[in-house]
Image (cartoon, rainbow, N blue to C red; front, side):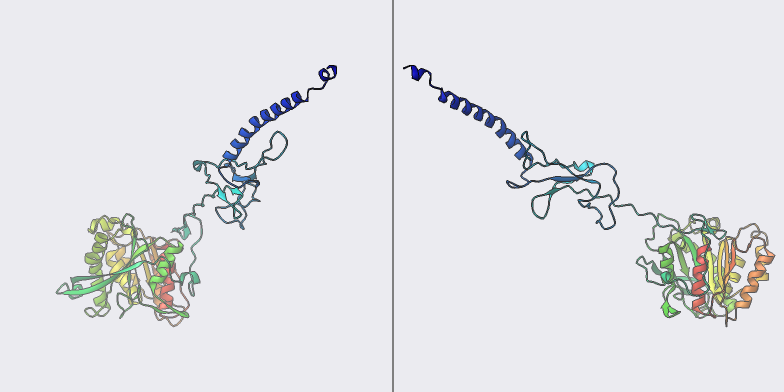
Length: 426
């Protein structure tokens, strides 16, 4: 009996150990279940899933090799969070960091190709493109960037010879006007081409250039007909489109009537016709139907907006620019582009110095001709010099230029000088 009383109570030890194990299980199992629920079902048993996300603070821009909107794992702005450890030092399974909220630039977690890693991707905001700089010249220097105007004496640069992705439109206007060349007796049916720049907006105001063709050509000469230019053929519309697209100058409306046609022939008839047609028909219609700086087509409104109206032409079109335009419509046009033609400058200068015209400023006089075999070159150069020497309003290099282009009495010369003159016209 004594030996039984001194025997060690193993049954009590077993009972205590069972209680300890039960207590530990009751503590660890709920914690493990909570951690597994936090993983949102991201991966299966036995896989370690880490989260990578972009901190919502400024960070260096990714290299050019990184696609826009995605950062690689090696980017300094991507942080890998260390795996969580439990009390025993073992790595806990299925630990996933929460996603950034969308309002802070975050995105929902995205699975990697192997279905395990959860990666947070933050798109870099797409940079806002800088607005295109449009050159606006005053005294031959761009008021925006300080660049001196560049005139071309051979072919235009290649970038201006390409078809534009932003083409303007050409409309035709059929109208009936008086036979001014016949002292107003009778009427003529005529057609005029009108170029509107790309994305023409009636909420904006546009400068207007009236452009006259050489003798024998139609209203389509400047805008839609293609003519030989170097090793290719080009229309004036191509050059207008590209100049406006690339910011060589501000977009403008270009109006192309005809002084001489089947009803009116010869210099004198063309001068008389264009003198009155510009004033009574063409400008009033353009101001009433298109978005210009003139309030309407009345003469008072046109006079108030003369700084934004220009007149030009080539060969006989240049002669009509002086004799039918500047000489009798100086109150309606502030700018002129006259190519390969002069038109008795001594008479024109004397008229624009008379009362009513003497106080009106000159915004631009641009002239030019071919360097060889252009019969009008001497007349053009002499006329240019006469304006500078006899009227202080014409100041060489500030609002008055003469640029000769390699070539003869031809399209190549006129198209190049049209581009030259457009840069400084308004």
